[in-house]
Length: 249
Image 1 (spheres, rainbow, N blue to C red):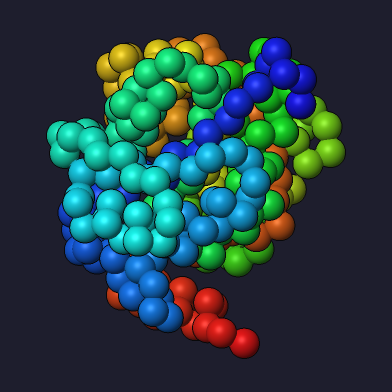
Image 2: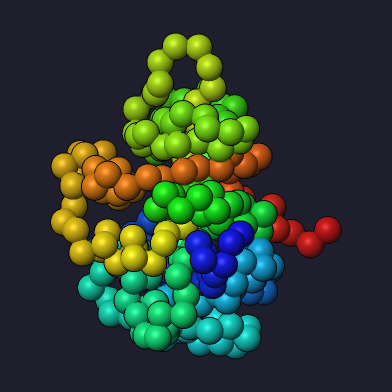
């Protein structure tokens, strides 16, 4: 990756305690460690760059620091994880040493470290403003589920797409695979700062998908196709599933 394009990435994991369906989930125990520590560790294992956890909860900060990580305290007013990331980055790196920001969601304890690395690949092209990942949908029920966000894009090289749209609908129509969008992002730092300064866009508000703000602003998003969708923990059932997946062998 050329130094002049992306010389110093940083990984930021946003985490808050006020999830409605599973309150306190960042501290949910998974085999003796809080879930947020599992996510932090996998982000570290990716070897992309230093990892910080952005949080408004002192107990989350204490858990990360006890594991040897770095936590950055933020305000509690943020409407999204992206806004929390932007504040944490400004606090942690006022000298602007880091020019590339990787956003790993704090509720993905099974995330593959290779997927974290994958979002850095498209930044070798200077026109790429933002990156993400996706996987081919293999379960029929997911093709029509509004909870599964579909990525629509044009292939520009094997395993890599130019993103055209994101939707909760079943799309595109016709023969061919559907792609499950995975909410892991990379941003050029200036792009991140521009996005959080913009108001929510019309399609973003309609689909309830924040990434549409970037597309409506004319920004280029490229996506890499990965093999599997990590488990997002939103419910007690998801948490039980994560515990089974991460059980010591």
